[in-house]
View: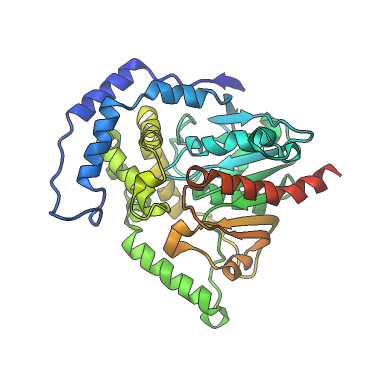
Length: 387
């Protein structure tokens, strides 16, 4: 395990600026707004800010204020933040991000979880906070061979063998929710509890017969079907032809920004005003992380590997993840918000919270709500672990 600091070379930043200046902009239908995808005038505004006001070195300082490390884990070099808790018995917690996100999404919740007393909380709720970058994302090594990387097995090795924890908890959203579910399902001997702040939950295959579903569950499945038709095109491309898409996204920073920023607007609780939830600096730090690491291809390739996994091992009908589970459901996910009875079919739910606001990127949108819920869920579990 080696200490790590972000330090992007000036040549990469000069090249980025040159590409931004030389952007060849597309046209747009009059009055299109965001109906056709990322809105032209907003993207031009964001790129102008990128060129004239965004300070990557300042964002590096913000990131490097967090202790970061790299370690060989199951054959790949994995980058992670590791902040030791300040309290009588800090409880280890691994937090997993999703797509199109990064470890940076968690920057607002790391310190409050590790040092609750400094943020008006109880020091007894302190965590040792570990935030890895998924393989192929950010500063973690990119897998270059066919096949789905079983991230849960990587995190088990990281937590128990590299960092030496006997037992730990896990939180995640989006892909991170799937990883967190897998930790609870396959590693209950070392995972005390899982907390999920996302609609991305695991279901059984096949699904229960329609006659056994409640009205809320049937309505949920109808909403999912509609969402997949109207919003799921990105996932179909990434799951079928990621390499074709990657040529454009890896070559054009504006194309990359358009692909990512549209999701931050569509999936957040912003009601159409993206900057009511995220600053330009937060959006551009996320995009720039993908750009300087050239990881957009590896990140979207995961969708292909998931779709074509020869051994998916789904939950069987009637099977549950018995590890104690907390779920925070944020309303900004809109059409994908899950009814509790649906989740209870496959999770041992010990805490369920219908959040009053927030969306897919909860750690950025509503960090205080998320921190409070994570603390509350693990409070009883950590007590049982230390008695």
